[in-house]
Image 1 (spheres, rainbow, N blue to C red):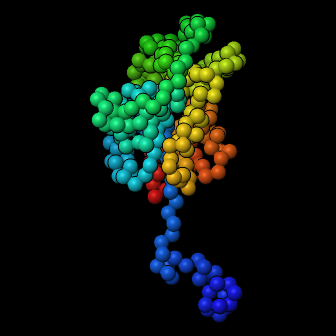
Image 2: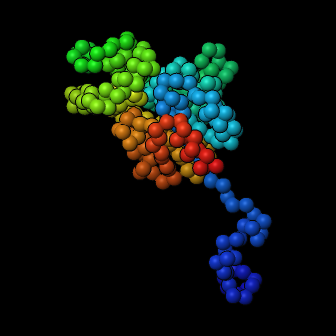
Image 3: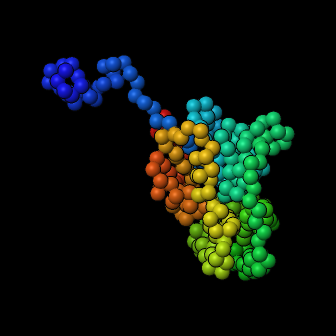
Length: 277
């Protein structure tokens, strides 16, 4: 022995070190990962079901990977979009993490067991303010379901959640030009210090108690894993635009073994997942 651990004279060469696995017939250690996905605009088109192309890809991907879902929507809306792939998740966080569900296909109708739910009763003066903003907005169309109380958070939309896909795109363009949602969200944060308000999806604002955002799911996921992975990966479309995915990505920036990706749609998500294979 030459004191460096090998039985050949000359010690370790870089070529030998770089090819250790092939020399000894050993495979490199594959990194274990747990993925966390936003749903709307990340795995699916906005408020639409998964595309056939993504379903075909995802049906193979789920056989080899572990994942959690975290959405601002409630469970029925998520299930409308996920085309039964929600059953394959390790866990489902709805209403920005204020509800946690364990998929279970044996439970009739909802195919999930609720693990916890954090109640939120919005103050009346907030509801009055939202009604005022709804009346004064210059956007011309109102389609219904403007203030949706999900019991754990509020979702507010000028155009209304009952809008058509065309109206959704039209309002999104209007809001991009006028920053209406940003202004309303800031007014809520300034006027109600105990609450947070962030842009959700293309047409709405998510409102909940401060701290009860998507970042709260990470600690629960860590507790849920009996064996911690080498890496957690979060993918969402509401990170760089200050949307409801930002708090979780921001938290993961401060932690070891975490990565995140901002995407502009399911096509980019599919590309990223292929790169991890």
